[in-house]
Length: 357
Ligand code: KG4
Ligand code: ZN
Image (cartoon, rainbow, N blue to C red):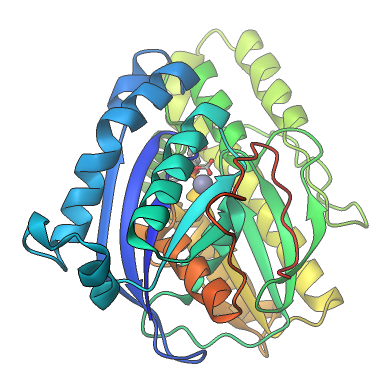
């Protein structure tokens, strides 16, 4: 079965085609096209929703064209009868995200589903991030699985008892982990997005071999629940910078200590939750999953403290927003026949992660 995925929830316009051959077989990505708007939003220090939506309008059809061209070399092939030879269903991010951005992807998917007479699958954006773990050759995942989902908008610990059955067992009470990276980068004058640049500067400091004498807090590190809080860390960083006349010369050190604080919390809470919930697999998901230090530390912690649990870390290409992950979730949802008729599909910027019907 082949699924065309479409994603436009924030500042990436993306289309992908994913092929699956059964529940236990790894999914294969046949095409994966992403048009990033980062360069445009950098000028404003963050994503401007109205600008993002207009860019999606400009990018959506070229991105789809480039993606479909890998299967259908001639545009003349795009008739319902022909398309059905190549694609079995369309999956689209229905929420959560920026409403005007989401609408571009959803309206495109509805139109194509109607014109090509293909079934439509509505995908929750976080569900997409989770299913990025099912792409690729080593994707043997045993349930129950615990997923640490860390993106610009979410920080969640999700238990998955089987495909499409989610239970949120912990979440952030304020900022998401990616949002904390973005805000910290802004304070340090490093621009948008914050994650990649903080990660790079932290590595620079580590490579220098020096020891840091900064000490930022690790909020809720030892709380008995699986919740997170990052706004206190962000405020502590702000106050420390305000008291330090020399902070501009110590930026890599600040990045190193900030990143260590975030990762200490994420890794410790994930390990504790995995033990408590008797997970058989732990997975990492979301844009912050691109962070090499988080990937390394989670691997290290799993090897030391979770010897009977398999750890799954998605391929780098499928960590930040993309449509292959949406098509991947769409594949399993389509197998479960969880379709939404095109005229019933609604965009929902506050969509909740829910169990499949
Ligand atoms: O999943 P994503 O692409 O979009 C949302 O769904 O929000 O995640 C974007 C977030 C941003 O906050 C960005 O700073 C963060 O992921 N991010 C990173 C890295 N690359 C992206 N955070 C830490 N380290 C990275 N290498
Ligand atoms: Zn995302």
